[in-house]
Amino acid sequence: MPRSRLVSAAVVAGSGASLVAATIGAIAIWRRLPESRRTRARRSLRVWRLTARRATHFAVMKATGVAVGERRRQELEDRFAVATAEDIAAELGQMKGVLMKVGQLASVIADGLPDEARAALAQLQADVPPMAPSVAEGVLTADLGAPPDEVFLDFELEPIAAASIGQVHRAVTRDGQRVAVKVQYPGVADAIRADLDNAEMLYGMLSAVALPGLEPAALVEELRARMGEELDYRLEARNQQEFVERYRGHPWIRIPEVRHDLSGEHVLTSDWCDGRGFAEIAGADETTRQHIAEVVFRFAQSSVLRYRSFNGDPHPGNYRFADDGTVVFLDFGLVKQWPDDEFVGLMAVLRPVLDQDPETLVEYMVDAGFLARNHRLSAEQVWASVSAPYEPYFHEEFTFTPSFAAGAMRTIADPTGPNRAVMRALNLPGSFVIVNRVLWGMGGLLGQLGATNRWRAILEEYLFDAPASTPMGVAEAAWRADRQRSEVGR
Image (cartoon, rainbow, N blue to C red; front, side, top):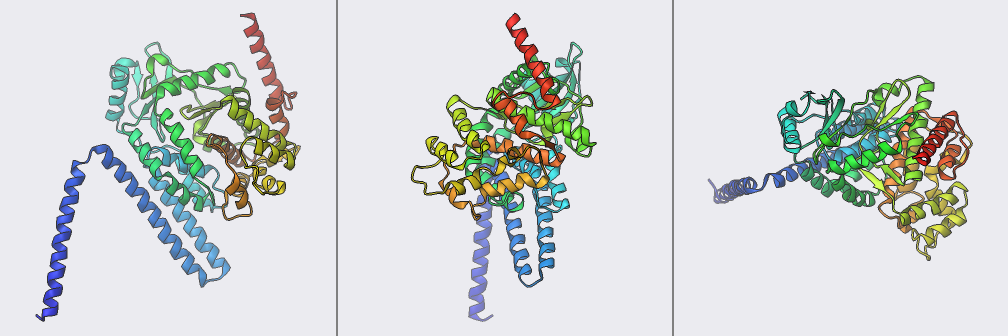
């Protein structure tokens, strides 16, 4: 063998030996890592692989599209959107925690995608793979001090629903009450910390599919503040019970009552509420869909404007729809409470938006610190960006469409679009991200229902105590009056 080939063979052999040694060393280090570290590493690797796959496919799709006609280019882009949506749904559906919540939000407002892509993302609104019955039994036993068959008269080990943080079991209490028992996934706290480390990267990937130009930083910071709270079911129980008291006896809004004696840090037990899921009622008759839309809208506005708080996870999986028209609202782990100073700032900006007064809007935004005094933006520039989500309130009657929420989001958040100068100048506090989540989530859901109503008039009932504008508003006003009389009589 020539000397050059011998040298090459030696180099290859040496490289191979080094690679083997490095691999053995890496395996040894991996085995010494705590399980929590290994779990986070595995989740990070899955996110990186998912992102790399989609980036590679995107590059191939763009390169191929250069040499073909417009029609063929659109076909390629549609195929890429479908493949990406299916890939995201497959990965995120297995990754309980923040990442799944991101996919759920995207699935609600994924306008402009082919039907197959929207259908793939819609899977994230439904159930996800559950944990083994023995694991769920162990969590419940550790929290409540006894196994399920001792705590409950009947407990179904097979869950009826599985979501991003925990799964729900049907049960019957010792006093015969039907209840829903939410059990948190073991290790989900470590998963959430890993998710938040990866969130900006994944949000960027999702924005290319469903939310072009989404700026993730503020959302990530708000999630960091809120997700730690969501992991403690004792806090969620308190949040939920507050909403129970606020809406007790309401004509169409129902919050399941909490069983505090059967709840703990990782277990939450509340009344069982019958009802259909969103997928079952999305194709319902016009009257049913319009009724549901108004209930959802009124719940959001009354919670924010009257009680200064809202469930920050508004996606269709958190609603159940009863046959009598009642809407059951679930999941109060991610509740945002607005302190006085933040709420005053929100209201100060909202009024000139509703009045369609760009000059006053800019003045208030400067006073509130949302814009610097030397921002150098015209009032028209600021108005074009900030007012987009409020379009339904500029008309006597407005119909939400599947495209509205996504279109408004693009207007606000596209850093390459016409409003990029406003985006760079805005200094919105992270807590306002929850307001946007409410707007996006509610707008997307109302769009899927094709909701038509006098939204401005309904909003003013809660914002300015205006007279009831619909029959539903009349009934709610009567309910409030009864509650006030009851409180005075105590």
